[in-house]
Image 1 (cartoon, one colour):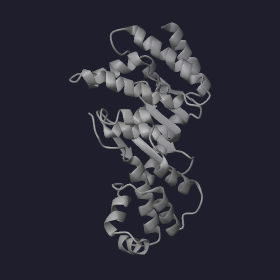
Image 2 (spheres, rainbow, N blue to C red):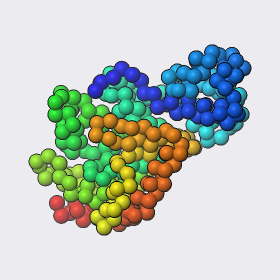
Image 3 (tube, helix red, strand yellow):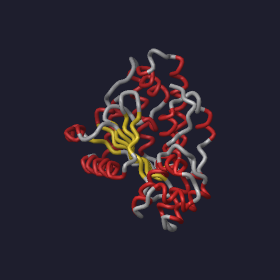
Image 4 (spheres, helix red, strand yellow):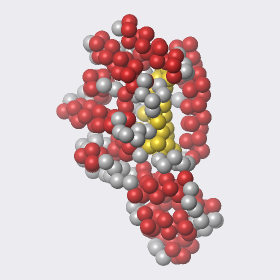
Length: 284
């Protein structure tokens, strides 16, 4: 579903941090706005992620709240100054705002953790596999499939750049056997693609074995994106039927991080996971 809206996660994340800082000092919006020389409406819009705040003004606000140099300040200023890549702007009017938000976060992440119970993660899908997955959801709009596949392939550039994020995907063992489309060669090629990706230094692929299937009930497929520079800003994104749910509340994100630790503890080691993937690839 195309959208002309620019990604808003950055503004929302900045706004929630500013609101938390204001609450910490027991100040009202009116008091801060008056002392800062801006209107209550402007500050309220900023705190709700509906208003862009220039890096200079953000720096002044952080000074006002006593947020000194450190990971939080650096991350917030980075969010305010970072411009999405040209490829993101290319898709701005052709892809949903939520999808652009996710891609924008991936581009700016220091670490990406993801859990997928039924399919290969989007950042590791090859074109044929992605086409089958996307084609099912876009059956009524076949002309959109090529755009969506191209967009997914473009997102994968984040793993190929000189300074890629640390990528930790966990997949259920069933993913290695779940055939998509009518051609078995699609899955066979995709499993080999997983084996190649798992050998990269910055990719730590883990398989949750069938013998630990009880963990599949902990959470639906989701992503944890820790923004750079490495600090305290992490967003959780849940994959629902036809939408992405962005979770920015720190307590909820912390719960999702604890869940990921449980999944990781139950999964095979990186070495054992690669051995299993290679075994499946050799049999297909």
